[in-house]
Structure formats: C-alpha cells, structure tokens
Image 1 (cartoon, rainbow, N blue to C red):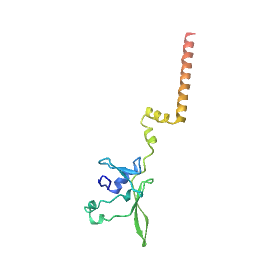
Image 2 (cartoon, rainbow, N blue to C red; image 1 turned 120 degrees about the horizontal axis):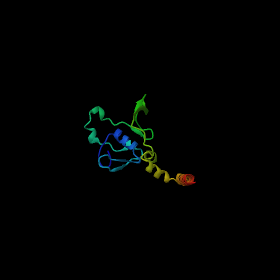
Image 3 (tube, rainbow, N blue to C red; image 1 turned 90 degrees about the horizontal axis):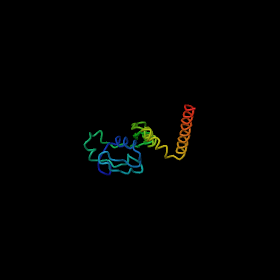
Image 4 (spheres, rainbow, N blue to C red; image 1 turned 180 degrees about the vertical axis):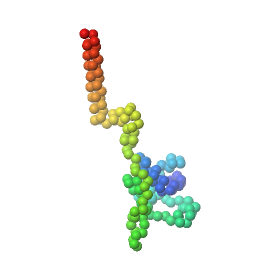
Length: 150
C-alpha cells in the first residue's frame, strides 16, 4: 500500500519501480503521489490487510520477498529441509531502464546534438568540425569560382 492509500500487487509496483528513474521512491499510477521506499525496498511497504481479506484463503498468505532491482527480479523465500533460505522461486519484472541520455539520444538529430553539446569534450570536437567544414566548403566555392571565370 502506498502513502496515498492506493493498493497494488507487489509485482506491479516492482514493474513500475524497475522502469523508474528514481529507485528510492515510487509514483502512484493513479494520483501521481510519491511514496518514499523503506530502507529494505518495495517488499517492506505496508500490506493492505483489508484487500487481502477479499482474496481466497490460499492467496492470503504473506510471503517473505526481496526485490533485486538491478536484476529485475522478485525472489520468494521458501523452506528447505527445516531452515529458511532464498530459493529459486523468482519472478522477472524487467530490467531497469538505461540512463536518460541513452534513451533520449535517438529522439532526433537536433536533440542528439544538444545532448552532445552538453559535454565539454564533445562540444570542442563538434565546433572544430564545423569550422573545418566551413573552411573546406569556402575553399571549394572559391576554387570553383576562379576555375569557371579563368
């Protein structure tokens, strides 16, 4: 349950969080309110016991779960020969989105140039390239002008 009191299954929240640019909080898909995540992550959010009561008895059990955001997995803790360990029961929720620069680079030529100009090394290279191209084109125009009228 999020701070806004909207309730979602853990899988859905994990899928939202794994694609979010801010892993330390989750945005409610209904009201857009932000909920800061507990230190131990998504599985430590409060469980809505009223919502659980509507589920069939077999689905009302609350399991110990951990969320591995960097791997995009929810893992369920299960018993094994009398002691508890993290089992292989896991659910893929998708891999985290790449950084914003990598996603936005393919938007368009102008946007890509704008992102490159934000980096000092790229800016110097691009400006130098433009100056060299202008000199080269000016030289070609002068050569053609002289060649045609000589």
